[in-house]
Image 1: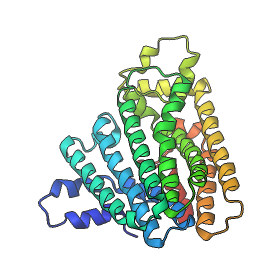
Image 2: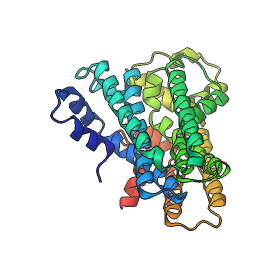
Image 3: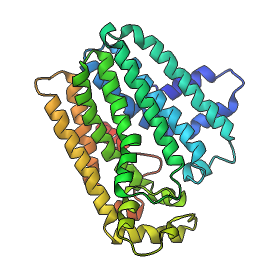
Length: 331
């Protein structure tokens, strides 16, 4: 199955844009994750009554938005290992233009989807999509300007809800509205999506813990640790030495903050399973069954994740828990 990135490569081939095509190769891992995000959109839209064409088109909207924001995020994450490997080869401008190409794909997909959305739901579908796009933009700005700040655990969770929970609503509530679900039902489905993606965010923040410390970005586990820390919090800022970073990770782990962070993530995915189960009462369409299966597999991956995975770095390179779910489905 082609991804949107594969199709974009085809459209760019023959144009004088060799750097863009070369940069697309950097995102081979990300395009698979984006396709997994789009699966939530497809199943939510199709299960809600949307046609095959509409469901596929809404899936492309989510896939394109994930890729666009991933590329733009990398312009900011100057110390991220993923970026450091390629920053010498590609200018920030090339990254921005590639992100803009994905936004073009979003615009085209939305234009094609709109006539297929029930008239009664068109306005609210577009309004919610606009709202969650701006929520995502807000989360990116907050991330950029959080460098060096010491968040409380509540602050960290609020930011996780904005940057992670928003994706759950964007990937499930909006496509469900497009498919014809009532507003109240779509919100209910969005609640389940928000909690599932909150759990994924906890897991992925732990995956990125070392890079975040290097970038002076403190997520839930460091925030939980610092809440009761008597030492100097400044030692978490401007750390670029690998041995120092490992020492800080060990310190956070020894306090139990990583385990408490994981427990929070497990609570979110457990809640998501219960909410989806409630929503699916009386619904037995095949797309809903597949959505439930993805929820269960994602929850299983979160429940199995341990502090040892964080300490040993056994997290995979460039893959989120969602991609591990894809591996489980393929297996």
